[in-house]
Length: 118
Image (cartoon, rainbow, N blue to C red):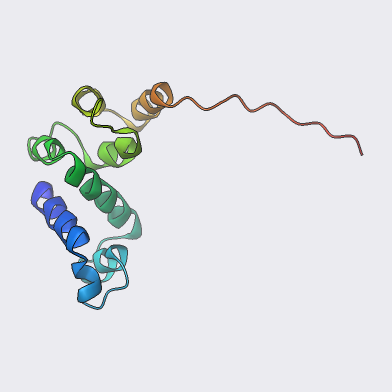
C-alpha cells in the first residue's frame, strides 16, 4: 500500500499540485491533508523524491524488500551508477546497520578537539 502513496506524492511534487491546491508545500499537504506526523511526512517525501529518480525503489517497497526509512536515509547517496547495488544492500537493515552503511559511503572527517588559549 505504501508504494502507490509514494508514487502519488512523487507526482504531486513533480506537478506542483500541492501549491495549486493552496498548500504552501508538499510537507504541509502531507501533514494537514493526509494526516501524517511530521516525521512520517519527511520520510515519505524524501522516499517519493528518490523514487522519482529511481523507479526501482517503488517496486522494492511494494515487495517489502526495503523500507521507507532506509530509502530516506540513503537517498542523498544514490547515484545512477550506484543505486542498483546500494538499494539491495540497504534493504531490511536496522537503523544501526544503515548508519554503518552510510558511513562507508560518505565517511566524515575526524573531528579533532580545538584548544584555544585564553
